[in-house]
Image 1 (spheres, one colour):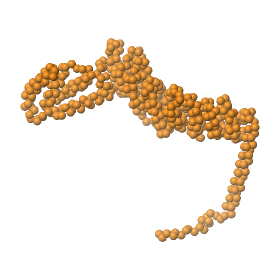
Image 2: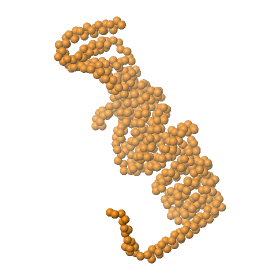
Image 3: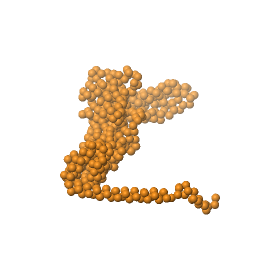
Image 4: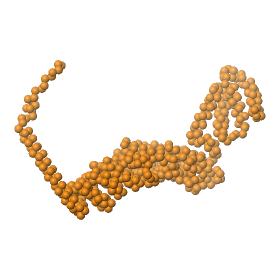
Length: 544
């Protein structure tokens, strides 16, 4: 046993003997048997506090010292001290769990607090990191909008933090990283109020004005700080990923449902930087975004940030390595193609088309799958949506090879035939304009033996009775083009159409004569009332 320990034990024994004699009469009445342990614990704490402390155990000693003060206070007030050891240990465990939820024990012990109201110009370079953390902790306080003084102070502090990071003099140690993530979580992560828009689609429509968040004046500064923090060149991603974790990313993705387009635009940039900097989180981000799309398509059909999420994934898809992983193809089949289903597809259709085209550019064999998906979700009564589908179809066909085209040309041109004959002049006109695309025309020319019979009847009906003159002129030009391409095929299609029309006329005449015979036979029969009166009810063979 060391000399110091021997000396401490002797002093403890002496102090215990003296104090126990002075207080023995006071505690004899209470019957408290654990007072001795309180006295021993108090004396040990007093002597241990005089010993030099080791750095790794600083947090534990500080916490222990704080609890010893409470024990002394209880002792001086005459309270009974029961189960001191268990109460002390449980309290220490609670304090340790709470502190580690924000900062690890080893990190918090190494941060020297600095007055948060000081300016960065008024402190030395060695104190600036601690001042930076202090200001971040100050900004974690959430104030009411009516308190303009505190709001202005917080806004000014946030501006100082952004300027400090922008200057390039910031050093993001682990305490600073933890403080930044905590401050952003407190100020940004929130639950949005219920949506009261009249439309059943997601996000704003073209006729509705966006709703702006009244707190954007300081939210914008917090987003700016978060963006500069993530984009900081010297930021250690291995340390930062402990705080920008899956929970942080999920709550960040929830903010994409904000009705403020300015906030969604900031989130778009931040999420893209996170995806680029933290490679370990990329699979999780893709999965989380897929879940948002599934919920939007198959459950709610309400979300404000689908366009921004697709815009991010447009650049992500372009960076996929070849050959494409099965996971990436599943994202196309299960997420992107079903996004054509909702009524509000017009809000994000441009970004959706770009993502689909990027996939086909990576793997041209996916063109057939995309076209089948378009035909599956093709609108029947929504003309504006049909126009968007035809435009997307043209972009897909431009990247479709001859082999893939031949696999889907029959169902595809059956649908295009309906569009050529549409009574909505914009749909019919847009379908005719497909032949103006050189690549599409080349595909049709090489497969005209199959395609022309599928659309010839629609062209003939348009030439005979379409109400719009522009559509009629386009139809005549298309017929002339087919005649120049293959006149014999056009004549054969004409004969086949005439035979089909004659067959239909004969069938219609037979139906007419059949109905006439039925009407004549019905006129010779007695009235229905007499027939019903002459019918006798069947006798019930079962005894009631």
